Image (cartoon, rainbow, N blue to C red; front, top):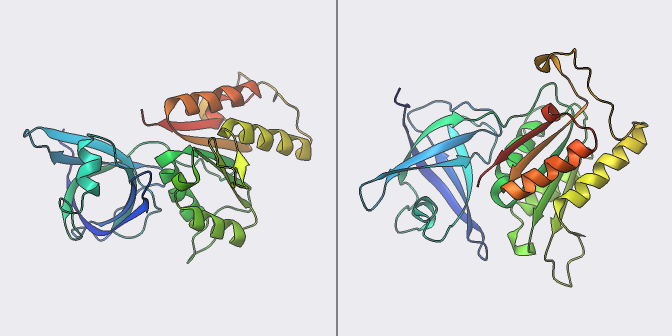
Length: 268
């Protein structure tokens, strides 16, 4: 069955990292009053390349639902057709349109909302931005229910930290949101966290368990409980390259976490 295509008009474009060549895009689907999706889902963009071949690329939506709008966070990839098509101003000026279908995907928050560890690298922060905008809206009720939400965001260099000011302001506004950017190749002047995300995820899990008096590793889940009926007091949501996702999953299963507690999406 053919997927329904929507025409999305580019309303704003901003380079959020010159060094990493990362761009933020805001699109409007004028033909729709609303474009409903769950935070964490993705759209697929469709276009014809220079050889007349139809190309499709999936991009996580970098925003919470807002009328007929959605936002993307895209790194320019060398010789990448779609990333260059989007990033190059001559090819896609403000007011230009692209064809998309969606939303798609199951990388969404489990409800009811629990304590949650969000783990991202690179543009894997896009769905995390959607989560946090939905959980902590600026013009609506807080949906976090007071649960602790950690965002562990790993990258190599300080210039590659996307949406830094936005997350810092959210952490200052909401005491139950904890923003933990960490650099694996930090320069001498960097005063923040260092090392890979696994180091800091481990600290969160161990400190939380100690505070709540919980055993580690966690006791095994009763095999008599159907997987569809499983409920946990904490989840982790992981998005990034496969080696990072696999590393965090291995770490958490070592603490006795059930596979259903670990929600992930990888983009390589």
